[in-house]
Image (tube, rainbow, N blue to C red):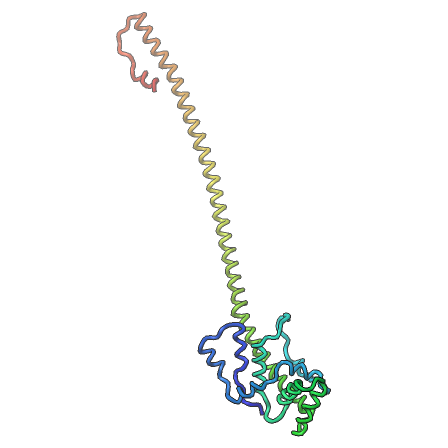
Length: 259
């Protein structure tokens, strides 16, 4: 039977965001037995060391889903601590692979040869009824634990993508649509302004032409009127001179001619 498990994986959430105060309280709830066991959790090197054991390599590792998007990464202390805590929380009762891995780690301080490290740790384990096959079976149990943690992590990643990528992509698409809409409006206004400008130019030209035509006709009329007025004025003077006429001069006609 596995020991009571706490929410060890929640610590990784800090990689993505800082939890609120009430969220932090939830993440810190781990029973005392789990905390004590966590202090003895095998470090990441344990998993590497087991690959050199004479026993057949476990096949459970293939069931751990790969990252959704393969990216070259580096070992992260927060993730390492969280996974170690998860393994500690899932430690089976009695002496199993968990304690064996710790024993192998302890042997590294005194024994340089890897094979001897494993054989020495196994000699002590065998005295308690542990076999190589039982250790391999235990590894399958802990592989399942890591698989579960990987699944929870992927859910967390999916949530982060939905919140910080997908939602922003949708927002970006909305902005693009608004920009396109505004651009169409600007183009429509630009076309309207161009049409109004063309109409303005055409109207201004028409006004200039009309004014010039009117002024020309007005000038022609004045010049032609003056010819008549001058003729009448000349005849009036000649009539007075030659014929002795005394009637009043036609002033309105002269004023019109002067205008």
